[in-house]
Image (cartoon, rainbow, N blue to C red; front, side, top):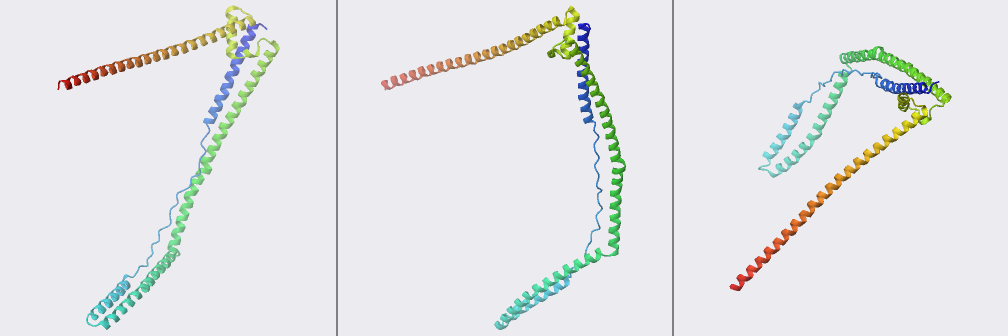
Length: 299
């Protein structure tokens, strides 16, 4: 086979191989991005049971009567004890006993009220009206959850599974096809490389082969001559790149040196100005001291 045709064919195959591999990477990323969002099973918001309000009420009349009785006894003992110390002492003791006796009575009243309230709530909870109402609420809650579950199981989840299955199947077929293409191109390249031994391994790249083919096509070179020309061109490019990098480095260094020189000049000027200022100050102080001495002598 003609060398130039072989190089051209290898260039085309290497380019096709790279493009196919790139397409495989692109399609794989596209497949990962296109995955459907898995639906979430929704939980229905439950309707609460009716709030039970106890009908039992604390009888404040008993508390008022007991309080009034205690106050009356205290007041009577006070009035009787104004003129009679014996009655006063007895009244004080009686008043204290009445006051202490009211505490357990009031405590018992509150305990009884709490017990009545608890019994009333239990009675309401077990009443047919409340039981039926709770059953109705339970049925509504179950029906609401069943609607959501039916939508999830019969619509959302099947749609997700079907869409995922479709995407997975498309990707599986495409991936298999692209991998087969890659294997076919690779086998063909290996066959040409091994049979022709026309190009060393370090030049088996689509871009390099394209440059070698262009050199052969423009100058009617052999493969060997085209490779030598390619190497020279590549070396010239590397040298030019190094030269450009060196020039840029030199330019940066020159700018830094110029900046350093300018900073040194500014610092030197500042030192000179400081020295002049110090000298002028010293002369002024000397003249001032001399003038003061002359004035003192005249005095």
